[in-house]
Amino acid sequence: MGQHFDSERRRFITGNLTTARLPAEHHISSAVVLAFPTRSKEVAERLGALPGVEVHRIENGKIVVVIEAEGAGTIGERLTEMALMDGVLAANLVFDHIDS
Image (cartoon, rainbow, N blue to C red):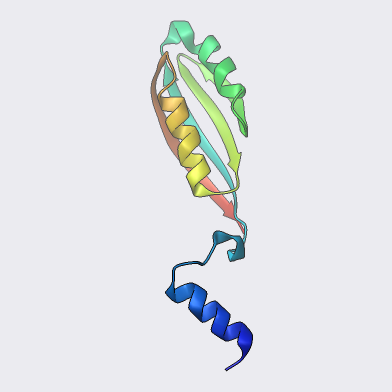
C-alpha cells in the first residue's frame, strides 16, 4: 500500500479526519419570522444586522428573510438566534437550497 493511503487510513481509524476535506457547501435558505406586529420593524432591523441575513418583506408581524451560509449548522444557528430574539414568537425555515 502507498504511503498516502496508510496515513489516510490511520487518520480515519483514530478519528482525526477533518471537515476541511469535505466539499464546501453553500446554503441559500428562506425563513418566516413571526414577531409581535407592534415590534416587527425593530425586529426586522435586528434580523438584517445578522451575518448573511437579508430582510425581504414585513407584513402583519411576519418577516420574510433570506439566509446565506456555508453550512447547515450555520443556518440552524441563525434560526436559533432569530427565534431567541426579544419580540420574536417563532422562526421557521421555509426553503433550503444547497450548492456544492
